[in-house]
Amino acid sequence: MNQPRHHAVIRFLLPVILGSGASVSVAQDQASPSPIPMEAKRQTEDAGTPVWKPIFNGRDLEGWVYKETGSELGVDPSSTVKVEDGVIRMDYGKWDSFKGRFGHLFHEVPHDRYRVRVVYRFTGDQVKGGPGWAFRNSGIMLHCQDPKSMRTDQEFPVSVEVQLLGGAGAGSRSTGNLCTPGTNVEMKKDVVTRHCTNSKSETFHGDQWVTAEVEVLGNESITHYINGVEVMKYQRPQLDPRDPDAQSLMQQRNGEVMLDRGWISLQGESHPVEFKSVELMVLPAAKPAETSTPGPTSKPGN
Image (cartoon, rainbow, N blue to C red; front, side, top):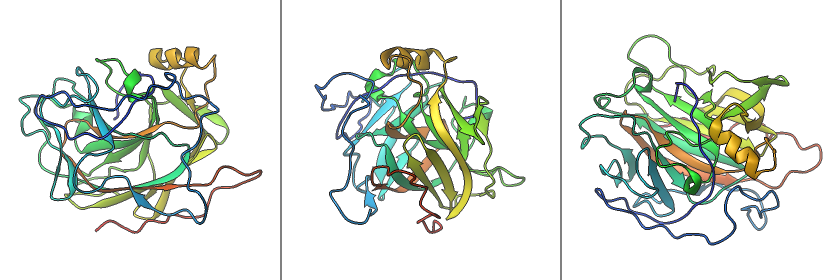
């Protein structure tokens, strides 16, 4: 994403295989509605060293649910999201034109401290009517609001976005950037209110696979890595009090703006994109004076 701010809110669930124009069934959690209670239990490993685990099984969309602007949660009116040849594809082959129908594929479980690693690439041509800024543009959305709380016509969830961009064949275009729909972050103890901030990554032209890895330490810090190289770091993700959807979340949270947990989603913005793998490493709860773990654990995509 790379356009004016948009809005949203938080909570949802379960396995789906998205069909053409069909409503997709999702198991509804009957617990208290969003936001996530601050005392909610973490999703943690029982013991031992944190390990990578796939959250995309390579066969279907079990454990994921899709939300597209203009449609209810779990409805994929144009069969945009599918699993083929072991990869998640966001494919616009059945679209006549884009018409502002942004899509987000949400994983079912919220997290607070973790690493997420995604191998992605852009393919083909952008669908007719897609915004110019959305050319070879996708994202990993972190600390998302509950997808069940999103308005039907909402374009983006309130979240912190790791923006994924592909090169245009010439010139520079970094990936692993930061965008902030309904949020702000801090850099060098200053609140950053601009919508997008470029990383220091190189440019990746063509259809090559790229590995994006992110370390998320609750409200402490978020660090982006591209092909194993750190390209950006910031602290204290928080709701933006200027944003209407963030304002709704703040009301539900009794004015609290700091974000320390949420859902993960993958973004579709009008250009075909593929995700070959999506992995998660749950990290231990914070300890006093704990600092970020050094360096990435990913290797370059192939």
